[in-house]
Image (tube, rainbow, N blue to C red):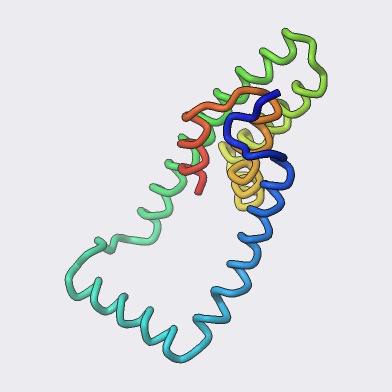
Length: 150
């Protein structure tokens, strides 16, 4: 099988992605822990507030917007992976149905807001590299979905 968005082994590429992601989570706080890092961040915040770059609303209003975006993204992901799951069941491929079902469960978790950080991270990190390449269903829509999840 030819993997559309892979140079070789998709499992290796997923491992490299997760290793770099975790390294970024460790290195970024260390760099910001230096005095010049916090000063730079504070300077950007002061500049953006002075210029009114980002509108500042009530926290609850912003949280409702984020929840609405999460729910809509979860609905799109659920729709996509439900179709993939049912097609794999119709083909009779148990392995592919398990993978599609796992993606469907993750997207339902995102839609309902259950274990959202973990579900979003796993779905975003594996959608293109592992799930779509193993199912042979690589599309531009999955790449856009990963960006929305990010």
